[in-house]
Image 1 (tube, rainbow, N blue to C red):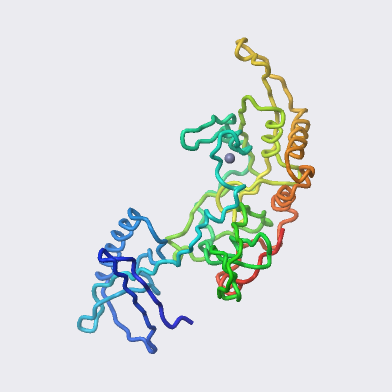
Image 2: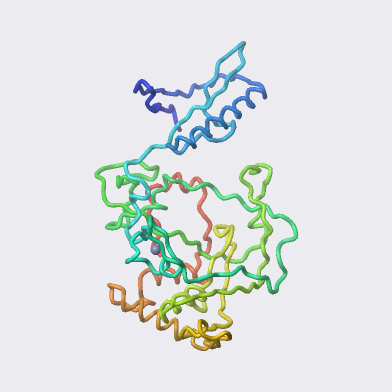
Amino acid sequence: MIDYLYKITAQSINNKKRDRVFVYKNPAPQYSFSAAEVEDYNTVLTGQLEEHLKRGGFALTEGNKLTVGALVYFLVENGRAVRLSRVEIPRIRYNYSRTDRLPQAYHKCSDPEHLCAACQLFGFVADTHGARGRIIVTDARWLSGSGEHHQFFPLKVLGEPHPTSYNFYLIDPHNHNQVRNYDGLPITDNRGQLGQPAGDVQLRGRKFYFHHPCQDWAAYRCADPDQFRRVLNKVKPLAPGNSFQFQVQFRNLSDAELGLLLYCLILEENLRHKLGLARALGFGTVKIECQSLMVTRNGDRYTLLDAPSEDETSKIQQYINTFKTAAAGSNTEGVSFDDLKNVKKLKKILDPSQAPANPDYPGFTWYRDHKNKTLQKL
Ligand SMILES: [Zn+2]
C-alpha cells in the first residue's frame, strides 16, 4: 500500500528544484469534472509530450490520456474540479544505463578489421567505415496451404516490459543467485528492497522466444477487445501448414562462410526458427529447408555470357561441417561447435520438443512479488 508519493521537479531556470509530497487522504474527498475538462487535459498533454520528445529526458510514467488512477493537479471551483493538469513522476534514474551493462561481446562492431560473422556477411556501417553485404534474401512467395485468416484477429494483449524486474534483464556474472539492479546494488527481498554493496552486473544476453505447444485459436484471442482498444493488435495470422519459397543470393563466400549461412537457415532437423509477429504468444514457428544450392565458381560469370552453375545441393552438409570445424578451431575454449555453451543453449530454445510446458510470461503479481527470485538456468 502506497501512503504518499514524493516528487522532485527538474531544475528550473533559476536553478531551483521543488519537492512535493502527495498524501493519500482516507476517506478521499470526491470532486466531479466535465467532459470539456477531460478534452482540455488531453489537448495540453499532447502538446507537453511533443515538447518532451523534442527535449529528450526521462521516460514518462504519465504519458497516457486521462484515465482512472492518473495523478493530476486541479483547482476547485464551486465544488467541481477544473483546470486538470498532469503530475509528472519521472522514473528513477540509474547511474548506469542499459548500454553500460551490455557485455563487450554484444557491442556493435566498429572496427572494420575485427567484424563479427554477421557483419562480415550482411555488411556494416560505423562512422566512415563500411563493408558491403554479400547476402541478399528475396521476398518469400506463397506456395501452398490454407492461407491467412479470413478476418482480422484481435491478438491477446501482453503486458509492458517491467524495467524494475531486474531478474529478467540482468545477471551477476559471478553469482547467478544474486539479483542486482542496473547500479549493481543487490535486491534483498521479493518486493525489491535494495541493499549494499554494489557488485558486478550485466545484461543477460539476447532475447529469444521458446516455441509453444499448438493451441486452439481462442488461446491467442483478446477476450475483451473493447477494453484494450488502444493497444490492440489486429492481424490476419496464417494457419499452420502454409509453405513459402524464397531465395538467398550470395557472393564471394568462403566454404566456411557458406556453411555458416546454410546452418543459420536450416539449423538442424529438430530445430525451428521463430519468425514474425506475436512470437511471445506462440506464433511464428517455422521450418526452413534448402531445396537446392547452386554455386558459380572461378569468376566464370565475368568471362562467359552463360556461366554454368554447379548444383551443390548434395554438398550442403559438407559446407556445414566445414563451418563447424572452423568455429571449433577459432573458439578459445577449444571445444567442438556442438559443445559450445551458447550453441547448446540455442539448441534447447529452438527445439519445440524441449519447450517449457507453459512458456507464457508470468502475470503482473508474479513480477511484483518475485523481485528477488533468480531465473532458472537453461
Ligand atoms: Zn557485427
